[in-house]
Image 1: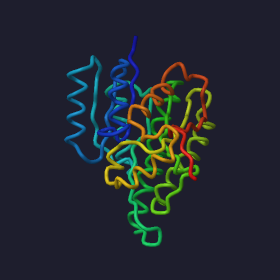
Image 2: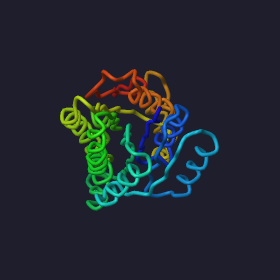
Image 3: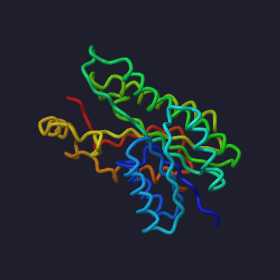
Image 4: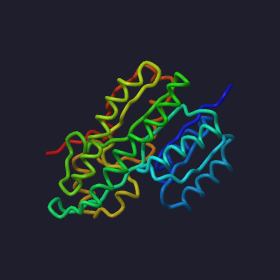
Length: 247
C-alpha cells in the first residue's frame, strides 16, 4: 500500500515540527518546509530518519514567492509522486504599537501568512485534484475571530484572511479535497517566547483550562483532521484555545 505524503509549511520548529513527528509516527512520508533556521530543519530531518521508517525530505522555500513554491511542489511530486496532506502552518508576527506599524513589516506578515497560504494551497490543490484526493488543514488563530490585540493587527488581519481562504478553497475543491481550519489560542511556541511573566499570567487567567497549549494539543487536532476519521468534515473552523474568554 502506497504511503501518504504530508507537506507541513514552517515545520522546522513549534507546531509544524510536532506535526512532522506525528505524521512520521503514523507512517506518513513527510516534507519539512523551512525558510530560516536551516540547522533546525536538518536536525529534524535527521531525527525522522533515525527514528521512523518513513521517507523524509527537507526543502527550503519562502512561501511568499510563487516561483519558489512552484519549484517546491514540483520537487515533492517528482520525489513522492503526489501530495495527500497539506498543513499550512508557516507564520510570522511583527508586533508593535498600532500607530507605529512599519508598512514593510506589515506587508511581510501578509505575504507569508496569507499570500503564502494561498500560493501553497493553489499549487498543492492542482496535484490533489488530479489525484481526486487530498486534505488541506489551515492554521489560523483566535486572533482572527474575537481575541484582538492592536499591536498584532497585521497578524490578526492575515489570520482572518486564512479563514476566508478556507471557505473559498473548500467550495472550489469539493468533493475531492477537504479544506478545514483550526484556530489556536495561546500556544507555547518560539513565537511567544518573549512574553513577560506578567502577560503570560494575565492571559492564562482568561483560559478555562488555565494554561497555554502545548504544541501537541494543536498537532493532535491536525492529525485528526488529516485522518480518515474526519472524512466528512469540510469547511470547518475549529477553535483550539482551552476555552478562552475576553473579560
